[in-house]
Image: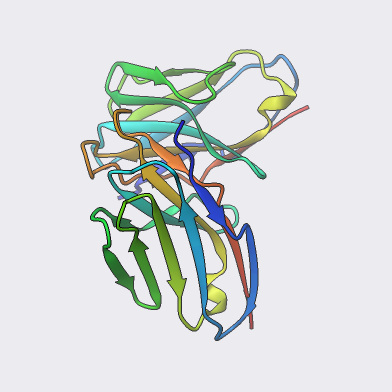
Length: 112
Length: 114
Protein backbone atom coordinates (compact mmCIF):
# COMPACT_ATOMS: atom_id res chain seq x y z
CA UNK A 1 0.00 0.00 0.00
CA UNK A 2 1.36 3.40 -0.98
CA UNK A 3 1.44 5.98 1.83
CA UNK A 4 2.38 9.63 1.99
CA UNK A 5 3.55 11.01 5.32
CA UNK A 6 3.38 14.76 5.82
CA UNK A 7 5.27 16.70 8.46
CA UNK A 8 4.78 18.62 10.54
CA UNK A 9 1.08 18.03 11.21
CA UNK A 10 0.63 21.52 12.63
CA UNK A 11 2.64 24.70 12.22
CA UNK A 12 1.96 28.08 13.78
CA UNK A 13 4.25 30.95 12.81
CA UNK A 14 4.39 34.73 12.70
CA UNK A 15 3.96 36.75 9.54
CA UNK A 16 7.27 37.16 7.73
CA UNK A 17 8.81 33.86 8.82
CA UNK A 18 9.95 31.15 6.42
CA UNK A 19 8.80 27.54 6.64
CA UNK A 20 9.14 24.16 4.97
CA UNK A 21 6.70 21.27 4.99
CA UNK A 22 7.57 17.77 3.89
CA UNK A 23 5.85 14.92 2.08
CA UNK A 24 7.60 11.54 2.25
CA UNK A 25 6.97 8.03 0.99
CA UNK A 26 8.78 4.76 0.46
CA UNK A 27 7.02 4.46 -2.91
CA UNK A 28 7.82 6.04 -6.25
CA UNK A 29 5.16 8.26 -7.76
CA UNK A 30 4.69 9.24 -11.41
CA UNK A 31 3.84 12.75 -10.30
CA UNK A 32 3.05 14.60 -7.11
CA UNK A 33 0.60 17.41 -6.51
CA UNK A 34 0.21 20.00 -3.78
CA UNK A 35 -3.17 21.38 -2.78
CA UNK A 36 -4.25 24.08 -0.32
CA UNK A 37 -7.55 23.83 1.50
CA UNK A 38 -9.12 26.71 3.38
CA UNK A 39 -11.73 26.13 6.11
CA UNK A 40 -15.13 25.21 4.72
CA UNK A 41 -13.87 24.79 1.16
CA UNK A 42 -12.53 22.08 -1.09
CA UNK A 43 -8.82 21.61 -1.86
CA UNK A 44 -7.40 23.77 -4.62
CA UNK A 45 -4.49 22.58 -6.76
CA UNK A 46 -1.30 24.62 -6.38
CA UNK A 47 1.22 22.71 -8.48
CA UNK A 48 2.13 19.38 -10.07
CA UNK A 49 5.72 18.11 -10.18
CA UNK A 50 6.62 15.31 -12.53
CA UNK A 51 10.38 15.00 -13.00
CA UNK A 52 12.78 13.87 -10.27
CA UNK A 53 14.65 16.90 -8.92
CA UNK A 54 12.15 19.32 -10.42
CA UNK A 55 11.70 22.69 -8.73
CA UNK A 56 8.68 24.91 -9.35
CA UNK A 57 8.01 28.36 -7.96
CA UNK A 58 4.66 30.01 -7.41
CA UNK A 59 5.32 33.53 -6.10
CA UNK A 60 6.63 32.95 -2.55
CA UNK A 61 6.06 29.17 -2.67
CA UNK A 62 8.79 26.80 -3.87
CA UNK A 63 8.02 23.16 -4.55
CA UNK A 64 10.62 20.45 -5.03
CA UNK A 65 10.27 16.83 -6.13
CA UNK A 66 12.91 14.46 -4.80
CA UNK A 67 15.42 12.95 -7.21
CA UNK A 68 13.97 9.47 -6.64
CA UNK A 69 10.37 10.77 -6.93
CA UNK A 70 9.53 9.49 -3.44
CA UNK A 71 9.34 12.78 -1.60
CA UNK A 72 8.58 16.45 -1.98
CA UNK A 73 8.85 19.68 -0.05
CA UNK A 74 7.05 23.00 -0.01
CA UNK A 75 8.93 26.08 1.14
CA UNK A 76 7.15 29.35 1.86
CA UNK A 77 9.19 32.54 2.06
CA UNK A 78 7.98 35.45 4.18
CA UNK A 79 4.68 33.83 5.10
CA UNK A 80 1.53 35.95 5.16
CA UNK A 81 -1.81 35.41 6.94
CA UNK A 82 -3.33 34.59 3.54
CA UNK A 83 -1.13 31.48 3.42
CA UNK A 84 -3.10 29.99 6.33
CA UNK A 85 -4.72 26.68 5.46
CA UNK A 86 -4.31 22.94 5.18
CA UNK A 87 -1.59 21.89 2.73
CA UNK A 88 -2.06 18.46 1.18
CA UNK A 89 0.31 16.49 -0.98
CA UNK A 90 -1.01 13.80 -3.31
CA UNK A 91 0.86 11.21 -5.34
CA UNK A 92 -0.34 9.72 -8.57
CA UNK A 93 -1.01 6.03 -7.92
CA UNK A 94 0.44 4.04 -10.77
CA UNK A 95 -1.88 1.47 -12.21
CA UNK A 96 -4.91 2.76 -10.36
CA UNK A 97 -6.76 4.62 -13.08
CA UNK A 98 -6.01 8.14 -12.01
CA UNK A 99 -6.40 7.75 -8.29
CA UNK A 100 -4.35 9.97 -6.02
CA UNK A 101 -2.88 8.97 -2.68
CA UNK A 102 -3.32 11.90 -0.29
CA UNK A 103 -1.23 12.72 2.75
CA UNK A 104 -3.08 13.80 5.89
CA UNK A 105 -1.91 17.36 5.49
CA UNK A 106 -0.04 20.11 7.32
CA UNK A 107 -2.23 22.69 9.01
CA UNK A 108 -0.52 26.07 8.76
CA UNK A 109 -1.50 29.14 10.77
CA UNK A 110 0.23 32.44 10.02
CA UNK A 111 -0.42 35.12 12.63
CA UNK A 112 -0.19 38.83 11.86
CA UNK B 1 -18.02 28.26 -15.77
CA UNK B 2 -19.00 26.89 -12.34
CA UNK B 3 -16.38 24.08 -12.16
CA UNK B 4 -17.51 21.41 -9.71
CA UNK B 5 -20.71 21.95 -7.73
CA UNK B 6 -22.20 19.85 -4.95
CA UNK B 7 -25.75 19.65 -3.62
CA UNK B 8 -26.65 19.99 -0.77
CA UNK B 9 -24.06 21.88 1.29
CA UNK B 10 -25.35 20.68 4.65
CA UNK B 11 -27.58 17.81 5.70
CA UNK B 12 -28.63 16.17 8.94
CA UNK B 13 -29.95 12.62 8.80
CA UNK B 14 -31.26 10.20 11.37
CA UNK B 15 -29.78 6.72 11.56
CA UNK B 16 -31.35 4.50 8.92
CA UNK B 17 -32.45 7.30 6.60
CA UNK B 18 -31.28 7.46 3.02
CA UNK B 19 -30.06 10.31 0.86
CA UNK B 20 -28.30 11.14 -2.39
CA UNK B 21 -25.51 13.67 -2.86
CA UNK B 22 -25.24 15.23 -6.30
CA UNK B 23 -22.02 16.33 -7.96
CA UNK B 24 -21.96 18.19 -11.27
CA UNK B 25 -19.01 19.38 -13.38
CA UNK B 26 -19.00 21.55 -16.48
CA UNK B 27 -15.40 20.93 -17.59
CA UNK B 28 -16.13 17.85 -19.71
CA UNK B 29 -13.87 15.77 -17.44
CA UNK B 30 -13.84 12.01 -17.90
CA UNK B 31 -12.93 11.06 -14.34
CA UNK B 32 -14.96 11.81 -11.23
CA UNK B 33 -14.40 10.93 -7.57
CA UNK B 34 -16.12 10.92 -4.19
CA UNK B 35 -14.04 11.40 -1.03
CA UNK B 36 -14.78 11.74 2.62
CA UNK B 37 -12.65 13.88 4.93
CA UNK B 38 -12.48 13.21 8.65
CA UNK B 39 -10.26 14.84 11.28
CA UNK B 40 -6.88 13.09 11.43
CA UNK B 41 -7.78 10.75 8.57
CA UNK B 42 -7.18 12.91 5.53
CA UNK B 43 -9.07 12.45 2.27
CA UNK B 44 -10.23 8.91 1.65
CA UNK B 45 -11.57 7.73 -1.70
CA UNK B 46 -15.05 6.20 -1.57
CA UNK B 47 -15.87 5.48 -5.23
CA UNK B 48 -14.71 6.80 -8.56
CA UNK B 49 -15.66 6.75 -12.24
CA UNK B 50 -13.44 6.76 -15.30
CA UNK B 51 -16.27 7.54 -17.70
CA UNK B 52 -20.00 7.71 -18.24
CA UNK B 53 -21.68 4.49 -17.14
CA UNK B 54 -18.63 3.16 -15.24
CA UNK B 55 -17.93 3.12 -11.51
CA UNK B 56 -15.37 1.46 -9.26
CA UNK B 57 -14.70 1.06 -5.54
CA UNK B 58 -12.15 3.12 -3.71
CA UNK B 59 -10.60 2.72 -0.29
CA UNK B 60 -13.78 2.99 1.84
CA UNK B 61 -16.80 1.96 -0.32
CA UNK B 62 -18.93 0.11 2.27
CA UNK B 63 -22.31 1.70 2.93
CA UNK B 64 -22.22 3.83 -0.23
CA UNK B 65 -23.38 3.41 -3.80
CA UNK B 66 -22.73 5.59 -6.85
CA UNK B 67 -24.03 6.15 -10.34
CA UNK B 68 -22.72 8.02 -13.39
CA UNK B 69 -25.56 8.04 -15.90
CA UNK B 70 -24.40 11.30 -17.47
CA UNK B 71 -20.81 12.39 -18.00
CA UNK B 72 -21.27 15.61 -16.07
CA UNK B 73 -22.98 14.10 -13.00
CA UNK B 74 -21.80 11.70 -10.30
CA UNK B 75 -24.25 10.70 -7.56
CA UNK B 76 -23.35 9.29 -4.15
CA UNK B 77 -26.05 7.41 -2.26
CA UNK B 78 -26.36 6.35 1.35
CA UNK B 79 -29.04 3.67 1.63
CA UNK B 80 -29.15 3.42 5.43
CA UNK B 81 -27.15 6.14 7.11
CA UNK B 82 -25.03 5.37 10.17
CA UNK B 83 -23.36 7.76 12.65
CA UNK B 84 -19.97 6.57 11.31
CA UNK B 85 -20.87 8.26 8.02
CA UNK B 86 -20.86 11.69 9.66
CA UNK B 87 -18.21 13.47 7.63
CA UNK B 88 -17.49 16.11 5.02
CA UNK B 89 -17.91 14.72 1.50
CA UNK B 90 -16.01 16.09 -1.47
CA UNK B 91 -16.53 15.43 -5.13
CA UNK B 92 -13.70 15.96 -7.61
CA UNK B 93 -13.11 15.59 -11.33
CA UNK B 94 -10.11 15.31 -13.66
CA UNK B 95 -9.24 14.85 -17.33
CA UNK B 96 -7.60 11.49 -16.69
CA UNK B 97 -4.53 10.04 -18.36
CA UNK B 98 -0.97 9.89 -17.08
CA UNK B 99 0.20 13.23 -15.65
CA UNK B 100 -3.32 14.54 -16.15
CA UNK B 101 -4.77 13.44 -12.87
CA UNK B 102 -4.94 16.93 -11.42
CA UNK B 103 -8.21 17.03 -9.56
CA UNK B 104 -10.70 19.86 -9.22
CA UNK B 105 -12.78 19.75 -6.09
CA UNK B 106 -16.24 20.92 -5.19
CA UNK B 107 -17.00 22.93 -2.04
CA UNK B 108 -18.09 19.89 -0.01
CA UNK B 109 -21.20 18.58 1.74
CA UNK B 110 -21.21 18.46 5.53
CA UNK B 111 -23.30 15.46 6.63
CA UNK B 112 -24.29 14.70 10.21
CA UNK B 113 -25.97 11.42 11.09
CA UNK B 114 -27.62 11.32 14.52
